[in-house]
Image (cartoon, rainbow, N blue to C red; front, side, top):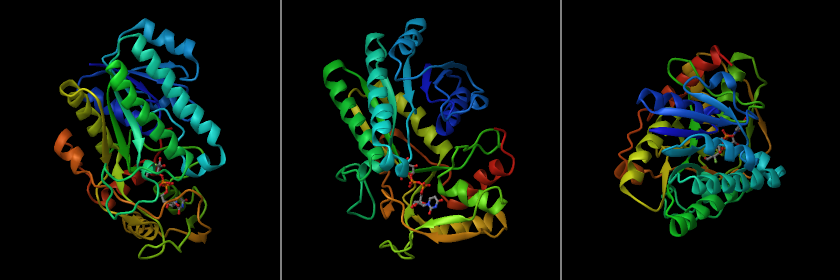
Length: 324
Ligand code: UFG
């Protein structure tokens, strides 16, 4: 298949490109390089374009036909979204609307969309399945939920087939160290822990230890980026057989607190992780852990990284020798 990867120069998008290429798919990357890296585009043509610029989007779709689109472009930082909500609604909602409109006009009928656990807000059960109420507590989650609603409406009105994948905490890197997670500034826990271990970043700030969790720090479900890629590839086959708009959680079903991540990283790296307590970060729910049975049963998803240590180890290889 020929697949347009919007945001294919970013962290998850670049791992997706590598994964698709390994299955013989043809990949075209659309990215505005605002947070993505040209050097991460190793498996297909890069078209520099912005979803907010309808004219350049039109040129992309007029020039060639795609069998499906995978849409990773987004602002995706919970904390930043609390400070800059308009940027999140513009990029994530308006940008996606432009993309959907271009797809419809050019007869592209299949979309895999990067959604998020942040649509659930403050969960009311230990394990979150897809029937859990959606009540985002930050603009990032709200913007993704708005797009999910757009996809449901587009299925009814225009016959768009879509799969929205609600990622829990994407982590890790390609095991060969070719590509990895490189954000500027870096706000995610595992990269910040590893940078603290290497001394290439400051001491880790632990954002709050008074949450209602066993050790008081926030609990998250870490899922390897290549396992996310696997689910996207499976979603292509799923859309072949199923019309409509579908939603799946992607997580391992195991929660780890910030303190547990620090101690796992200490074991993996053999180094001390300098860290200090800091105030809570606005917009953070206490616990987010996925029930992903639906993805396993319907998509046939089989995550390969079910333990935290190998996820951290893959990230550690990348952070020790980043190529971009
Ligand atoms: N944390 C720290 N110190 C840091 C960085 C993070 O204590 O330097 C804490 C956070 O407060 C949070 C946890 O570690 O409790 C994980 O934080 P991340 O920033 O790594 O990830 P988030 O849970 O905030 O968000 C990530 C993605 C979102 C997605 C969410 C879903 O960035 O896009 O996972 O679970 F919505």
